[in-house]
Length: 283
Image 1 (cartoon, rainbow, N blue to C red):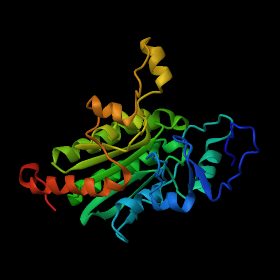
Image 2: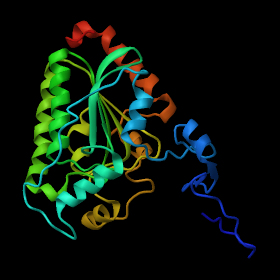
Image 3: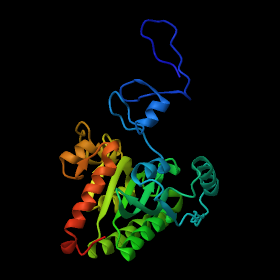
Image 4: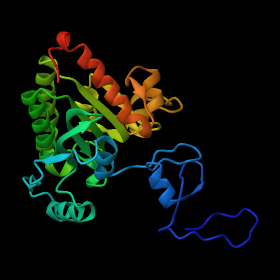
C-alpha cells in the first residue's frame, strides 16, 4: 500500500497486513487499533464493512449465541451458468467466508434479553438472497413467533440472487409473510440496515421493522443511483440513498453508530417489554 505524495518524493509504503487506508478521509489506520474500534475510522467515523461473525460478536452477549439451520446450503435449481457455473460460485463463496450461505441465524441474548438473531454477510456473493437466505430468515421469524422472542435482523445485501431467478424473487413474499405473522402476534422486530442494503432485501423484510435503525453512511436503496436518476430523468440530491438522507425523509427511525447499536437495540426492546401488555408480548 502506498500513499500519494504531491511533492514528487518517493511515496511511503505501508504493509497492507498492518495498515488500512480510510476510503473517506485517507487516514492510515493501524489494523489492530481499527479492529479495537469495531472497524470504524478513528478520525472521520467511516464505518467499514463487517462480516457476519464480527457483527454477532458485537451484538450478542458473550457466549450466548447458538446458531440454527447451519446445515442449509444452496443448490442449483436452474442449472445457471454465466462466466462460471453457479455451484462453483457457491463453493468459492463458502471457501472465502467459511459460511454455507449469506446469512447466519440463531438464538442469543442481547443486553440480557433473549432474542432470535439473523445477520447477513455481504462477503458471501454480495449478501444476495436466494432460497437458503429466504428460508433461514423465514425460519428465524417462525421461531421468534413460536418462542415469543423479539427478532433482530442485521441486513447487508445487494438484493435477490440472480442465479436463482424467480425462486430468489419469491423469497421476498415468503419472508414478508413470516414477518406479517410476527407483527400480528405483537412480537417486536428490529432491523439494522448496514452498508449496503439494497434490492429485494430492502424491498422485503429489511424495511418492515417496528424499529428501523441504520449505521452512519450506509448505502440504502432499491436500485443504484445512476439507474434511478436515468429512470426518473432527474438529477438526484446530494447524499441520496445514504442513511442520513433516509433519516431526514422518514425511511429509518435512527442512525446509530456501531458502538452504540447493542445498547440502543436493548433500549427499544426493553421499551417494548414495558408496553408488553398492549403489544401482547412479554419476556
